[in-house]
Image (cartoon, rainbow, N blue to C red; front, side, top):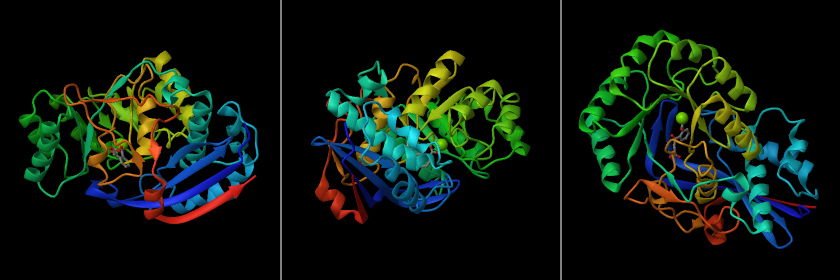
Amino acid sequence: MKIERIELHLISQPLVHPFRTSFGTQTERPSILVAVYSQGLVGWGECTAHNKPDYSYETVNTAWHVLSDFLIPSNIGQEVSNPTDITDGYRGVRGHPMAKAALESAIWDLLAKAKDVPLSKMLGGVRYRVEVGVSIGIQPTLAGLLDRINQFVDKGYRRIKMKIEPGWEIEPIAAVREQHPNIKLMADANSAFSLEHAQLFQEMDPFNLLMIEQPLHYDDIFDHAKLQAQVNTPICLDESIHSPHHARWAIEMKACRIINMKVARVGGLSNAVAIHNMCVDAGIQMWCGGMLETGIGRAANIHLASMPNFTLPGDISATERYYAEDIAEPAFHLNVEDSTMIVPTGPGIGVKVMLDRVKKARLNYKEFVA
Ligand code: OSB
Ligand code: MG
C-alpha cells in the first residue's frame, strides 16, 4: 500500500500525579503522535521523547526535526507491504531511535489494520492477557512512599517498581519490603549511580528484589558487567540498550540478566522483535517498559508484551494512573484478580484515537502529502 499522507500532532497532557525519577520531575507529558494514511486506513504511532534531554538525548524538538526533515521525506509516497520496507530509508540517519520508532510503529499499525489482524498477531504474540505492575516515583517522604504504594497494592497491582537515587535507596527499599514481604518489588535508578556504589547494591541483595534497573551510566555496558559480577540481584538494562547490537554486547559481556524492552528506545518494533529473539536464544528474561505513554503507545506496549519471552510483568498501568482523560478509547483497566491487562482484539493497536481530544491537547501540527 502507498503511504499517501502523514500527520504529526504534538500534544501535551497533564499527568494526574507528578512523576519524579533521578533525572527530574514530570508534571506534563508531551507526545508526538504520528498518523499514516493509506487506502482509507490510518495507522498511529507515538514518540515518547521528553521536553528535556534527560532520559535520553532526544527531545520533542529533535524528534519533530528528524521526522519532518529526514524520516518522513524518505517514506512519503512509498509502497509498503512489510514494516521492514520503510526502515531501509532510516539507514542514513544515525541515532534518534524515538523518532524512528514513532513512524515505524504507525506503519505496523497500518499494515495490521490492512490485514485486519491485531498487532499482537503480527508480532507473534501468544497471550490474551499480560501481567503488569506500576512504577512509583521518588516521594517527598518515606511515609508518603508507603502510602502511595499501599494505594496501588489496594487497587490490585502485584508488582511494584520504586525509583531510587543516591540518598533514597536502602532505607525506602527496607521500609517497603517490611510492609510487603512477599510482593514482587524492584528498584529503578535511571543511571544515578556509579561503580563506586557497588557495596550499596550488595546491601540490596537481602531484600530479594526482582531486579535492579539501570543502576549505572545511561550509555554504559562495561561497568554494569563488573557490577553484575558482584551482586546476586539480577541487573536489568533500560537506558543502555538502543539497538540489537547493544543487546548482543550486554548479553556477551554478562552486563545484565534481564532487559527492559521499550520500542521507542530501540528504534521500533522490528528491532524490538530482533532483540526479543536474541534474548530467547541467550536465556535473558524480558519485560515491557513504559514511558508514561498515551493510549496509543500503551496499546502497542500491551501487544508487544504478549510475545513469548515477556515473562516478567510490564510497566503498563491503567490509564487513570496517568491521565484524567486520555486521547484514545477505550481506557485500559487493571484486572484486579491477577494484576493483568487484556490485549486488545481489534485490528492494529485496537484503540480508537479521539481526534477532538487530540486537537484540544495540541500544540503543533504538520501534514505531509505524497
Ligand atoms: O525508566 O522506566 C523508566 C518513565 C519515563 C522515563 C523512564 C522511565 C519511566 C517509567 C514509567 O518508569 C513507567 C510507566 O510508563 O508506567
Ligand atoms: Mg527504567
